[in-house]
Length: 231
Image (cartoon, rainbow, N blue to C red; front, side):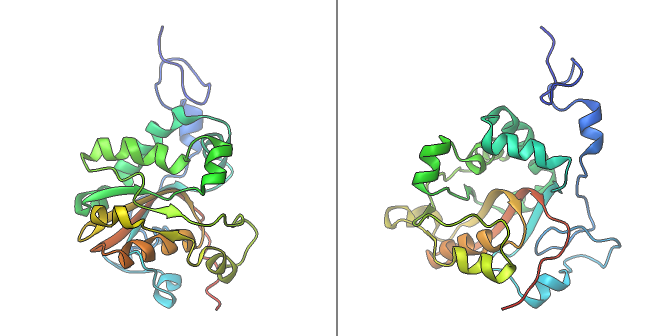
């Protein structure tokens, strides 16, 4: 049988149907080197947005495949909550293009972990489902357990930038038995959505504290509007 589009669209495409594809706002250069937010004009290579300039993150660079909006949200929520792990390889291919420069610099790929209680309820980690095929595409080592979430954090939704940072402060760690996986390596973190970058920042701090040489981040989608940078 011919392939069915993943969004249920017209037959003949192993990815999204033409209509769904045309609605996704993919991010291309120019973009902030620090968080991957798209720029309206090109300020030059390596330039950070005002938010990143005001509050640099522990991760050195970041890229996002697309904007998180009403068109990409449904696909990401299906991956995250509706057992649509079949979407993960497609999103890994998006990231292989959007984060090509970060992949070229990375020594290994690690997903942002779920807490064990949430993993038990959901049965899979959506970040891991994307990171695994991305590592295969990039021919890089995949480190599924380099990080753990050692406490169950509340959802980040509805919190301010400072509230998000407090919520995940100290929530992540590199287990002692996994330190050798990250020591001296350039790690690319993978997650589904970036808003303020607080979760990725907390993960990067844990990896750097365990001896990682550097940490960058790649996400499927990011919120376009710059969040607050308040203390």
